Structure formats: structure tokens, C-alpha cells
Image 1 (cartoon, rainbow, N blue to C red):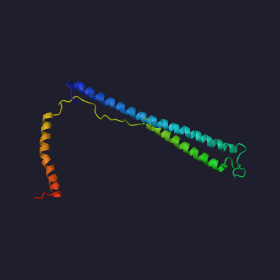
Image 2 (cartoon, rainbow, N blue to C red):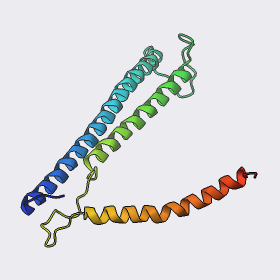
Image 3 (tube, one colour):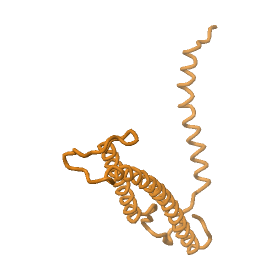
Image 4 (spheres, rainbow, N blue to C red):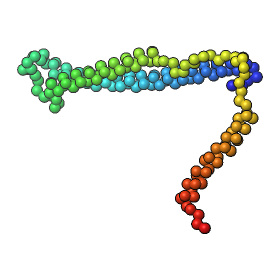
Length: 168
């Protein structure tokens, strides 16, 4: 960075780094918040599904308790047996618990998010100013171009001549 005042240049560089770090942290935070919101939405939907399957299971057990040997199991209700209703409920409960665990993991990860940008050293005032030497860079670029262009052109000319030989 070039500036007439060395202290101003240092302060500007420090402020740019701070502002960029805050910007990136805000982006990361918004992204994580969006993910958490979606996960909470999925969890609520799974709660509804779990409650529906719990209601079906409770309809089977409302008339009396189910014996362990299954001898008093009710007959099919709405095309579903007690065993199917129990299996569906247990599956939905497992899915609910997995979603809840993932949500917990995401919330813990949000609390422990590493910094998006790490500034290793704060800007300091240099004892020896550094700025590009425009004249030297232009001269070196022109000299390099003049030296490299024949090295690139000769193989290209040889290849083109070999492909389409000139007949005299």
C-alpha cells in the first residue's frame, strides 16, 4: 500500500483487515444460522410425523393393554396391524432422535466455529519503504518479451513448415 503518511498507511491496512474479517464472520454466521433454521424446520416436521404414528399406536392400546405373547392384539385397523404401527413408530422415533442429535452437533459446532480469517501479524510501519519500480519493471518486461518471443516463434514456424511444406 502506498500512502504519503506511514502511520495512515498502517492504520488503513489494519482497518481493511478488520473489516474483511468481520464481513467473513458475518457470512459464516448467516450460513450456519440458515442451516440451523432448516434443521429445526425438519425436526418440527418429524415431530408431527412422530405424533401421527404415536396416535395410530395409541388407538391399538386404548381398548386395553397388549399382552406380551400378543394373544390379544387387535385386528387390522385402516389396513395396518399393531406390529406395523409399532414398527413405524419406532422408525419415526429413531429418525427424530437422529435429527435432534444432528441439530445438537450443529449448535455445538456453531459455538466453536474457527475464525474465518486469521491475521498473523498486525500492520507495522516499515523502516525501509517498498514500492514498485515501474521503469525497471517495464524494461525487464520488454527485454524478456524480446528474448522469449524467438524461442516461442521458431518451433511454431518449424511445425507449420513441416505440416505444409512450401514447393518451389
